[in-house]
Each structure stands twice: as structure tokens, then as C-alpha cells.
Amino acid sequence: MNPEFDFEKRWRLVREVIETLVLTALMFFIIRFAIQNFYVEGMSMEPNLHDKELILVDKWSYLFHEPARGDVIVFVAPPNPSQDYVKRIIGIPGDVITIQGTTVIVDGVTLHETYVDPRRQGNPYPSFSNRVVPPDSYFVLGDNRAGSSDSRDWGFVPRKNIIGRAALVYWPLGEDNNGFLPDVSAVFAEVHQRQSAMLQPSALLKRPSRASPPAPLQPDQSLLVLLLFPSLILRCRRQAAWKQSGHWRWRAAPGAGRRHDFLAQRPAPDAVAAVGQWPGAG
Image (tube, rainbow, N blue to C red; front, side):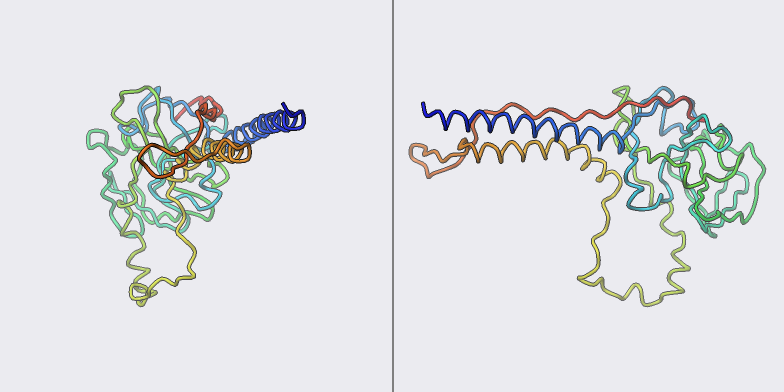
């Protein structure tokens, strides 16, 4: 055996192992700061989040866009900073909120909230009219309106208190709400629509420019991309190493044209998200 070739082969293997370990550690730290586990305690978000469930919270999407109406968020509780609450955003900065009994009105538009179970509808707090959401603040409500301590009780959530968006229910298995939280943006589709049409009547007739920036990923899609990204990178890195080492080759099959294939491979290691403990859900 050629000693020079043997040394090069061993060095390539060592380099691949080192690069894989470094890349795995890098992906671990990226995911550690982008995704966090939380433990739901309480029934303020029934029927969409159940007591004792584990959820994944997307902590990175709000680095690229602001929280939106309908998002379910986890945040440091204004009335008790030692606890984290989970609620749904109803009003964003500048919105005018009116609540009369169980009727919620945002900027003059009465919401038909499909995510609120009529059996859990209610309002133990005083009604109010035309409350403006301050800058860098959000108005939130629990889906269990009859049993939730939320903005009706203690006011607005500062932007700095938001930890992330509740994106995925993953434990226990077999529940009726497992998987990604549904998109409820249609509930708020009419909010601001009339004002925008009056201020910019030509907006509906204007075609988007080719130079316009692409629309951002939806939160669920961005979280899915983040979960798949480490394994894709590791797979591409391994394939590149195979090509360099000569393991990528052409093979001729009897009675068929030439084709290319890989040698047998081991699966890339899975990325692991760090676990956080959620002391209370409010």
C-alpha cells in the first residue's frame, strides 16, 4: 500500500470527524437559543392548550418580524415576573380595543373568534371601550375567557417580555391538539382593511414589482426549516466528503444506462433541543 495515500486517507477521515463534531456543536447552540420547551400549567388556554402539555416555543421568528394578531405567545408575566404566561395576541401597537361583555372589537371590527369554545366563553372583568394599545406593547387574552387572567385584568404585555411564539404541541401523544398550532389570522383579516383601502385606493390595482423582497416564511414553516436545517447540513457535508474521497462513483447496470449512487452510509446524528421548565401558565 502506498504510505502517502494511506496517510491522506487517514487525515481526511480525522478532518471529517472534527468538522462534523464542530458543526454538530454549532447547530446545538443555534437551536438552544432558537427553540425552548415549556410546560403548560393551568387551563387558561383551553381548548387549544391543555394542562400538563409540553410545547415547543419558537424564539427566533420575532427577530425577523413583529408578533401578529392571533399568535399564541409565551412571555414574562407583568403581574408576576417570576412566572411565564401563555396567551393569544388580540391587539398590536396602535390598535383600539373594546370589550363589551364577551364581544371583542378591534379597530371597529367585531371578532368572530373560532378558537374560543362557546362553553368557555365569559368575562369576569369590567367592560371597557376604546382602549389604545401603546407602542411596543400587546393586548392578550386567554382562549378560556371565563377563566383567564390576562390583559383584561392586569393590562398590556411589553414587547421586551415576549419570549417567543408557541408553535408545536408534542407531548403527551394522542391528544386532540398535537402538532402545530393552527393559523387563525383569518379571524383578524378585516382589521385595518377599511382604513388601508381609504388611505391607498390604488393599492389593490398595483402589481408587485419584480424587485420586491420575497415574503417572509410563515412561523410554522420557519420552525420546520430550523428543525431540519442541522440534519440537512450534516448530510450535505457528508456527501461532499464522499465525493472528495472517491466514494461517489458511476456504476453500470446490466441492460441499463450508466447511473451514479452512494456507498452505504450511517444516518447523521439528530439535533437535540434544550429543555426548559415552565413554572406556570397563568
